[in-house]
Length: 266
Image (cartoon, rainbow, N blue to C red; front, side, top):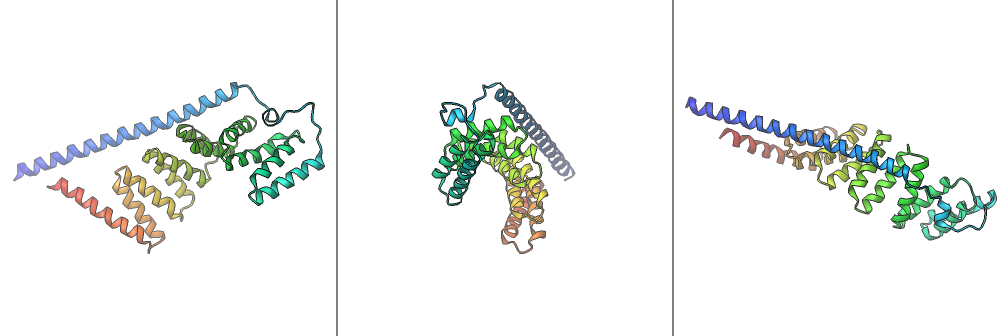
């Protein structure tokens, strides 16, 4: 009998060592992935700086001569654009914004609204071009990188989307919505460990937002980290004691954990 206990003890010890080694390797892979993403973002920045600059007016209109700033007409076209946007008449909004751009030297002010209209109407090519151009003039704008990330996501260019969202989060670490978007993107790519980190940071910014905790718990489960998944569901229950989804999920996890523990003790 003593030999049997020693054998079981040795088996459990070996299993724990293998699990610990697996977690260490997995953690290294996550760090390497984040490092690669950061390097790719930096590489893209350099490429963008080297590309030939294209003026917005040359893309959207042909002008015979130099334009004159007409403040009254500019204000009128911007008013038309705002009115059209409020009525979701994006076609008219686009026309008014292009006209307003021809009446001012401050193209960036109008271009940001026009880029958003292109994005909302599904004209991803023009939207991407304009946001990249805007980033040349304002490379520290988290919102512009977020919009670029949305475009890349719609184009299913997931690696480019990750790079844009990573930069947006880097520039604005206190925006839980950006972390949520990045987490969802990683989840879509089945990078559950990194996605969980995004949801965890979002939950730290909004401690009573249980949706972030549910997303974190899901990532833990997908990553076979049942203990942390259970801990997260229990956190939800401290915030919302009568949350049935959290109760059911925590009970299911307890059963799974017990089943796994019983396998080691047999």
